[in-house]
Length: 98
Image (cartoon, rainbow, N blue to C red; front, side, top):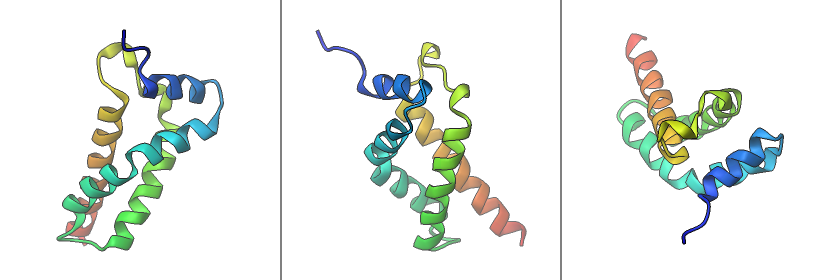
């Protein structure tokens, strides 16, 4: 057998108050998140903007952990990526409004 999903194990630790689990999850997906955000932000922002957005994403994910439900069939990585896309899109929309 394959064993438990490592992301769900970390998510479970996080839900029990282990903040180091969030760091491990974000570190795991850091490069992918940065690339996804850069592709969205690039015409409107800088690498520094993406770094700021990644920090904002980490805070947001921590605040919204109770919204993730693994029983809905969405992998944690998919939830993180969807959140990253939304944060980057919000940035682009804000830049376009100014």
